[in-house]
Length: 321
Image (cartoon, rainbow, N blue to C red; front, side, top):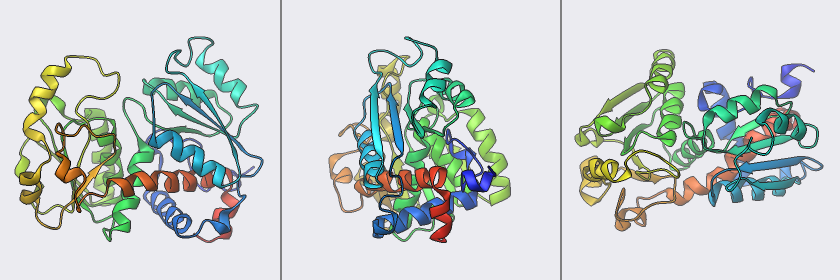
């Protein structure tokens, strides 16, 4: 079976945004837009297919968007709750992957350690999708780009500001902007900067795409951006001293003053769930400039587009998307 027959993507798994080329990202966004507008042409596309979700962390948007999306395309979903027993504790990660490969068509994993995804995908015979790890959240970044596009902002020319903690969601946004082009100001305390390894990968991609990725602690860097993006200051299960971290991040709250500094054109973005009164004030989160619910909605559409590209590339090619 050729690569084209197997998948319309060059990668077999999606563990981080860097697994995708710019053209592949844009094709996924187009497919997601088509599916959001009219799902009928894709009805039954994944009939007789099975998807398993392995989740070590709680979820609302990720679980429901994968389950609802796959079911709308005609497939069946199995959820395995690993919040009490980590993947690999009862039997090895490798044995789990090899067994699941005999029964299901794709595996979605939400886990504590990105290293688990690497081990699992190395022996899996079916596609593995990262639904969040400590280092990356690629499906969220794809949904973010789709939401921006729906609001008239070209993802390859967007001018964005990330404010707060340089976490896994930030890493995926960095890789997305670096791959497509545009500008991203990552505004964090010096102690909360994103991963050096992610920044190195992004620099190489930005050299080819013309993107600009800037890391600073200066909040005035939000001036003129198309959107300000933030996330919770302390992630689920994060170690260290959360009180000290939150104290360092207090000046980085997204509020009316910061949005005014950005300008009247700036949208507000958050991957949710949000901690109101911490990283963002309620008036901004629930205000007219917030596109957080569009980001959440597009999770289902981009994930459907991704699953179709991995499992039914013939349909993606037939629709000439």
